[in-house]
Length: 213
Image 1 (cartoon, rainbow, N blue to C red):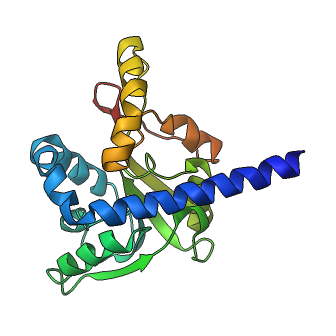
Image 2 (image 1 turned 120 degrees about the vertical axis):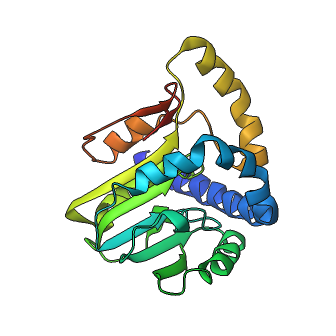
């Protein structure tokens, strides 16, 4: 029975992964435009705050998308930046031309099954990514596998609020946000991080209890 359930879960995850890839390929041409207003408000400062904590010399960025974080990369890093969507990566490649001295290797890859060596990175980062990973715990476990023993994971994520009214509204809106932007806004990411075997050293609320660093 457990084997059947595990097989069924894998099949569901693979179907959801294909849907996620297709969704981001579809919205990639307008993705930056769609999020430009939010970037001009608080998000750019949150990104800067995250990348100030990166320790090198090697870094993995999960869900690089269109390359929005390139301006915040600390100098001198050797970076592997991955994304599930070829459409998103094609836009990241165009932006990468503006950083000729950067050592950034862009690769199409699924965080749920990383084609990377164990213990390869000093730091792994992701910004608003695990809201769209079909099996976030599996993806986080893979990130943990490729981090060095003393490596650290830095996340900027929106999570399901603990406030009853907000929690209700977020659960109500999540199917809509998934369809439009691919973002599942009712994820319990803090709990998922712990399930994946990470020890949380610091957790900071940036906007209410929804956006966390």
